[in-house]
Structure formats: structure tokens, C-alpha cells
Image (cartoon, rainbow, N blue to C red; front, side, top):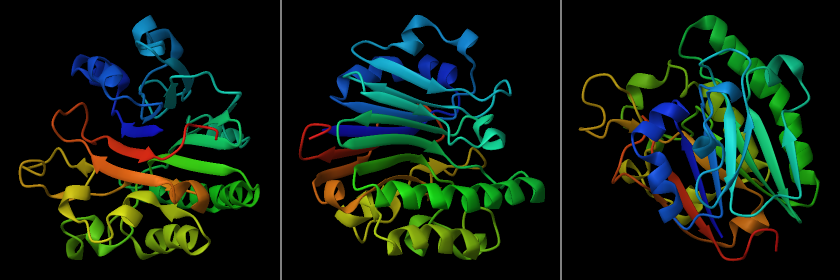
Length: 260
């Protein structure tokens, strides 16, 4: 079972850069995408259902903003759209596909980089999201949470960690929050397979300066899984041969077919 996650920074923009042609060549069973920046009226049939995939989406109400999606080779048993929290769900940040005893989730945490008001909104989201994650973990089902978490966990996860300790995405409170997930049993799948990885693990680069060329990046896109399915992960890599976004795809291969 291969699962891919990618923040598209606009699904139409990514499509113009070759994302839809790249997708069917990856052998992926599920592809989670974030930051659609589109509504249903903007979606062509190829965006809705790329070759060989069924598509599912949770759009933000605000035009050109947020939104998450999920492409699957097989039809899920159930799709769960949103968290049931109206003020969060209007931003299109959570989509869960249920396959037998396994759930794959496309999730997009807010960024706090636009100012204090957005950082406050990010903290509020984190506070309300954590109990949902605890319930998922306690359900006894296998779960893989894929997406842009907008948090770099450790100093290994960004190039300029010293200069970013007071910036959104690497604040002590954010790092402690995601650390609580891992302390509670959730597994950072890429880090489990590559415990010492640094620059090759980055998944996002600022458009400012020469961040991409100099690999001044951050690892903020994760696949975070329950221990059982995390233990079946055999390979994980960040794809950088082509660029569809300011993020790069994170690809993980798990040992068993989905839902088994």
C-alpha cells in the first residue's frame, strides 16, 4: 500500500505544473492533498477524478483558500467530511476515508504566519483537534493522518532552527503539542524509518530568496500513524524531481493492502 501526501498550494496551479500527469505513474493507493484553493465550481472532471482515481474533497467556504482532498484507487466504505466543528469546518481542513479497519485522513492545520490573530486561531484549532486525535487513537482502528501540520517538531526538521524559535511553525508551544501526540503513541512514520534525516527530509521551502536552491527548508508535512500500521511501513521518501508546489510529496510504502 502506497500513500502520498502533498500540499498543492492551489490544485489548479499544481495541475498546470504537471501534477495530474505525474499522479497515475506513482502506483499510489491513496493520495492526500491539501490547500486546494478551489471550490466545487472550479473543479474540472480531471481534477475531480484523475485517471484511475476516485476523488473526494472538503472545500473551504472562502474562495481561493484552504480545502483538502483525497484520491483513492478504490472506493472507501465511508467518507467523513469535517470535524463537526462549524467554525473549523468552514475552512475545509479535515477529510477521512474509511477502508475496512483503516482510516486515511487528509488534514491541513492552520498557519500562524500571517499575524497574531492567525496564530491564535492556530492554537485554538490545536486545542480542539487534540481530543479528536485521542478518540481516533483509542478507537482501536488503524489510522494514518496525512498532511501539512505547519509545525516542525525538532531542530532536525528545519535548516535555520536557531533563527525561527520565535516564529510560527517552530514555537515551543507548537513543538510541545505535536510532541504530545508522539508521546501518546502516534508514530511519525518518516522519522521512524529515517531517525537521523535532515535536509533530505524537508517538504516545504519559502518562495523568498533562494530557499529551494539552497535547500533552506522545513519538514512540516507528515504521515502520522497508529503503531500497528506504522510498524508495517517499509519505505518513505520526499519526491523532489519535479515541483508542483512550494511543498514536495511525501511518499510512504506500507506492507499490506489498504484495510487489511
